[in-house]
Length: 379
Image (cartoon, rainbow, N blue to C red; front, side, top):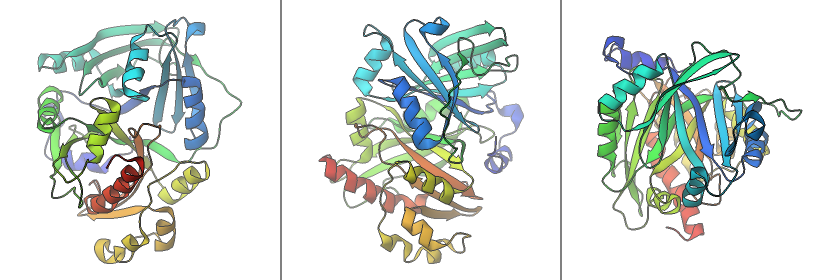
């Protein structure tokens, strides 16, 4: 993985010997969607993914179709049910298109399941071995907030294109990459007074640590507020911020998400890039819509964050936010929701030393979100 700097800081405190669940990063993110073929085409066209693998009736899978797409170290899986009497169909009816599985790379999926379930994790999938001509792959899994699942994927004895049961998906249509590299972090939205419950879950069940906390004084506007705690595994490769609503004059973005998703779930995935100006320019040209930031945000930017390598003009034109911490600075931007329900969206992030999550941008960001909420009539 490319996230080496954050891991160094955390490793200075937590040695590998104390990490009972060593994670190697995010293996893939799986979405349950109403039409996987069209969703795969969208993510290829708009985000620059390439065709990777397919599973469905032609490969012996009778109840669903799944399309795996990849860009550098970033893998998405789009899965759709083929009939109505199907748990996938029920999931989509309740939540709309959204993230079901956040799959994590491990060296030993059996041990990962035993370690987490023995500490109170609810089993989703006991360890199973999947086999084809490319070798053996072991996976297991546990439940987390809402209906979200973590799978543990052990690949050391598997050389196939993706997973057993999938075949290589060759396509004549493979748009150029937009420069997205890997998953930086995944953010979960949980219900009222549930954040600390899930912080405790990640601490006790998965051995994570709370590395940053934000209360309603940090994340608030005139109208709404939320609270957040950032959980990180031992080596810093996997980070899960957890959000919950806080009292405000009007409905917060977390409340809007919970209402339209009908429960707790993954609010957004932060996708890392090595050149955010090039990536966001390419994404906008392909139709990806981002939140609009007032030009006044940039008036005192350099006074707030100090020297940056980028010119202000293109940052302002694209709406890219900048924040700093003791280690450096970061650049970030947030998309509008990917579906008609105001639920899942994406963050594009470039870290230039910074290990934080853009605290200095919260007010500008959430005011931009509130403008979108007000247009939808949900503020």
